[in-house]
Length: 178
Image (cartoon, rainbow, N blue to C red; front, side, top):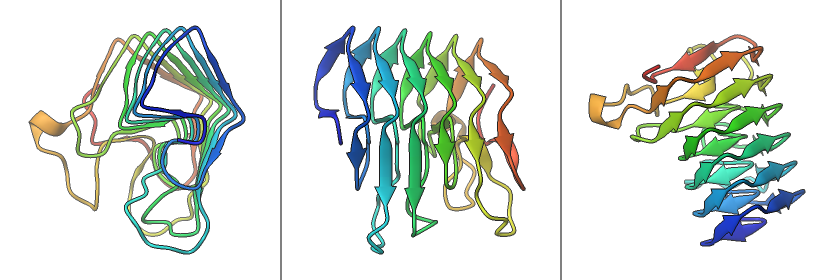
């Protein structure tokens, strides 16, 4: 992670960090009452890898957090630029807003994984992925490699609000249980 990794954070601000791999703000952390703002995950060094993105968070669990203004970009479209707000995250009572993804999951990218989001607001997130000929969940994504997840690996969203998001050329939500 560009900001913090492998940590437990309470009432912290994670602001303006950059990672050239997963987790611009935080990587594999537990967060509560935190602000994750203006972090970037980028893969612009022309390498193909398993980098997924996660501009704000990657592999984290967050409770009562603001996740805003984060970005995920890549020059390798199929390998990164996913999950500007978070990739592979569990979210509880969080606000995920104004995040920008160069590819999938501007708010959340939880592909093929049983992550959950409870009582969250996903608003005003934006994906400007080019039209490459097949639908994707540009704001909330649960699919990987054109493969639908098995029911036990479908991301779950409970009592969440999804409003004001923009995804040119694509679906807002793909392969997630709402």
